[in-house]
Length: 376
Image 1 (cartoon, rainbow, N blue to C red):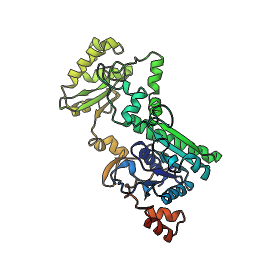
Image 2 (cartoon, helix red, strand yellow):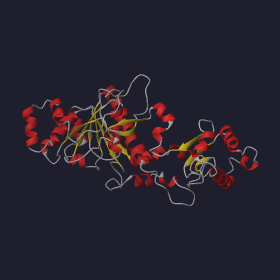
Image 3 (cartoon, one colour):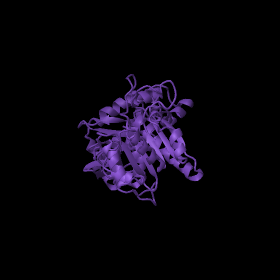
Image 4 (cartoon, rainbow, N blue to C red):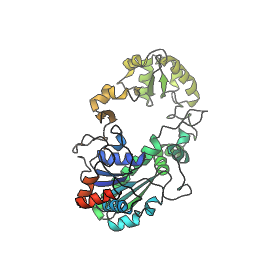
């Protein structure tokens, strides 16, 4: 793959969610990512999280398979694993072993709770990790229970993307110093960091420690979504005075003195009721004709099916077709480096012989490993 990480080799121990997302990020930007899959597993060519990989299927209960994994890690710049703390050590592939084999190795560990702490051995999911970090408490409407933001914040923002950043930083350090290291990436930690601005606002008294009453969490009438007459939705984010003034102009409310109280939280409820009734008088397309591509800070709320067809996304090629399916394109973009178009996810184990041959295993040894069940 072409990109700024071309020449970097990553070994990914197959998992779900944030680990594969980190592997996707690195592969999207040019790294060679060899995925060690479980025998009998499956990858769908339409799945963005599994794209642009090379796959070898190893039975890690077989000592020969563990040795293959160790040899792969000797040849790599970094690895990604997302098992519970202690699993890699029990396999004989813990950091002490692999860093002794390869002193420059960047050992990326992805977990929900982290490698240590009272919760470290407990099962969990995104909703739990962002609950413990305080983030879930901030998402929801006033007087209602918190709303999980799908699994974007813990798994992907605070998990996979945070690990990809840590991997890139540690790879730079290793290139300069020859020193590898372990990255303990916990979704609790990462999601807490994603909420950095909220912590700053709380510390300076700019928000209350409750959901649905603050400017950016649906408390304000000028920063929210609204339902249109056709049942579709629009988003408004008219924070700055000049943008708010344009919102009032476009909605015909510029002469209404009630809307002068933009920053008075005591008036947000009544003003939101007024906007709710107003936006319900036109369709989403009609509001787009009035406010789209202006400084109102407006956009239609598009579904996953609609978003790839929007002219802005089409112009920027924000989405592309991989494996016969629509997928988000690699991001961000570079002025000098050009990322390749992602490849569809491979069949599990499809590249096993080629991966082993590249390690120097001859045909007879590969055949013996397949015959013994280490390689599937």
